[in-house]
Figure 1 (cartoon, rainbow, N blue to C red):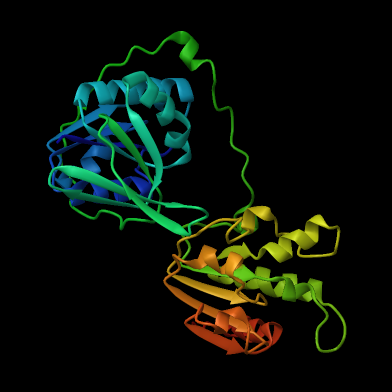
Figure 2: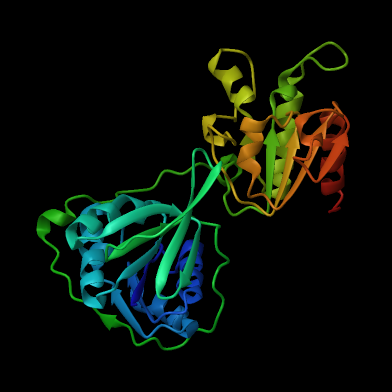
Amino acid sequence: MKILALLHTQADGSLPKAAYETLTAATSLGQPFVVGVIGAGAAAAADAVAGCGAAEFLAVGDEAVSQPRYATDAAAAAALIQAAGPEIVLAPGTARFARCLPGVAHRVGAQVDTHIVALCGEGGAVHAQRWFYRQRILGSFSRAARPWMLLLDGGAQPAWQGASGAAHAKAVAVAFAAEDQRTAVTGIQAPAADAQTIRPDAALLFVAGAGWTKKQKDGQSHIGDAGALIQTFLRKTQASLGSSKSLVDIQSEGQETLSFMSHMNQVGQTGSTPRHPKGLATCCHGEEPHAVGWRFINERRAVNLDPNCGWAQGKADVVYVADAFEVMAKVNALLEAGGQ
């Protein structure tokens, strides 16, 4: 069985973390594999993973693929697949590949599956796993069709670590048509670093619930203070910000809430399912639809005034029965003083 680990570079020519995770998946199957790289500096990126044990390295580093574009990315990926002749194609489920690889599968006559979280190779067969029904059912399946393309979810595999070297990547020629290059990236608009609250690679996920906007023990709501405490903590720790559904729904109902929170931050059954080493839930009760989004957080902690909240029913490793306003004010003070 021949495997192709299909990767792409970033704007600076390096490989993203998801590419190293894909290499881990390829090496775990115990079968010969080829590495194919698309993008600016593809040959140099192949050198960075020369020690991964691949039998061959292929690269498409033309100027046409120096920026993400469906037409050129699809043409380059199809050329690499045809050059490698694999039965299994593994690729990171990044925005760049999620956009073009389903179309590539049609071009090369392959079957494609996305959001793969685990692979197992036994007896020459590959079995893939992915979640169904809002991450409540884990399914294991295989396909007889070849080639079979699998896009792997980020964070499901450890990133490959190994020596760099001389990969001697073979350049694969691709005939890019002029009409394939009509779309161009003219610039990038991005929020300021301190305005970016969703950080998939952060070590900590901080989740705020609707309790931050409720009346406190003095009978008044303190939304301004809540926002300042949360933003200070995020700025000092570079944690990723999550939200319960109830909090973001308050905003859609026209009630005053945290101005920097949106549905993009929502964690749970109807939101995202992040993967962070640690998670801290504050002022949310740990109801099942919300807590289901925490299933891949390694260490869960919560701050809540209710000792009988959902987090205390086995959904968190540690529950602090305390006022989140007071706790976070103290934590921020410790961070300001250089504490951990």
